[in-house]
Length: 633
Image 1 (tube, rainbow, N blue to C red):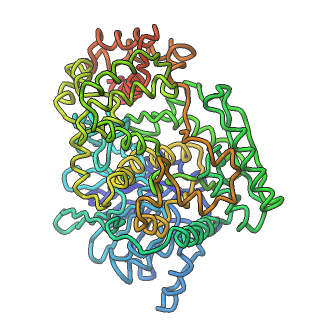
Image 2 (tube, rainbow, N blue to C red):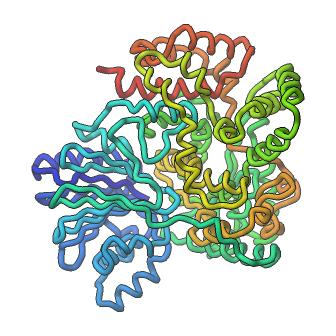
Image 3 (cartoon, rainbow, N blue to C red):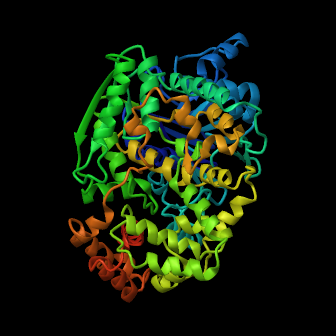
């Protein structure tokens, strides 16, 4: 795992060399094991390395035999041995045993088409001085980030905003559409960023910049097809799926450094840990963090999973557990800085603490991320099905249910009353917009009351239009399966994987996700929706394929996210810190919010009249971003 950055068509080699040094240094946390640079008359490239494969010899950039092609890579290429063998047979000479070196040789053979052959997680850049072209590419699901902008005829790119911010002319005009999307979804969807002229290269896309005419072309090179379903029995599909997941785990055990696994209280990480323990050449460490708040503490269930795995693979899994306090406000400020734009998934806090705990022992950890999107694991899919059934009832009965639901106390996002009230609100939504409203943290009328003059343009944006624009590209025939497909292309890349990358790389830890293996995703897409979601429950085939790996107490648990008690923090331990950021910071002073409305939301939350934690958390993270970027003018 690494960090990459570059300046293309810079017009001044001396200035570019100084700039690329600073941009590369800004990514040191992503690669503390070394750095490398390449500068010529047209292009400057920078690389920070977290050495995983061939630690002694894998220094980047990589340069082709004739010196014309230069490559930098962030990530892992799991099929590099197979590709290397083919390339050597065609006369290519390798200088290292590093997996990423295959990129420069593949480009020599195939040009930009080589990206389709890569099996891995990556963001990369290749410069061809002969054709005067630069290629940027990102992995299929978006596990590794890549940002870029154009300044005149100059292209600037990097793994994080920190690298771009080290370039003095980075655009900083807020994009009001992105602001609206952020407050609704708590992240800014690709290809946009919070800045109007800074972009994310979307997952499974590649960008080519031609220096001869300063033109940019972007194209998608992969997409799973949900429309064609395999003719296979459920039992046979479960057997095949098990083989594919085991192979995916085996690929991700590739490392020349210590490797471990994350272990929570759910089935996803238990499956990965169980397979890894079975396939590993030696004992693995499994890492769990727990919290004092019992609603969020999964240590007991993780211990049950570890014990079950130990019975199947004795002595191959060493379970390490610790109690952490995610309520450290300085950690939130640190992660906000790493994010570079507003990001409000609160589970980034425990993810960072889990990464810190693991990084003390290993440099690589396997996780269960992606299983919910690939195998339809979210409870909201069930909520959507139930809501569709309510549509058959007369409007008066639905209205009566909603009124009765709002009599229940709302004690937070995980309380019974809170869940029922939010479900009741769904029943009044137009069915076509309902799924967006499940995720919407700032409904349009509320935004109009909350946003001040500085963000007035955001109040004029309908964030639901983002989903509308995505839905026409979906291919799944089943309505519920279409929701999971939508999540695969939106929530997974924009939220889940962004969170994991930011949190883990802030601690210089590489995280690998077997459920996001290309073959696993493509196979799951071909399965009938009922194989994945049935009887009001998701991950049906995953439970069947691996039922021997996890104990019944874990298998029977309802879905639980990696959450933290935000509502309580805002009323208790963090109250003073948050009040200062909300009401004394640059965001309010510059007119981003209407103070009267913000104070009403805050007081209603403090008085427990409403649980406004989601919205206030979004405002807080925007305020932290705004203070860092605009507060010192």
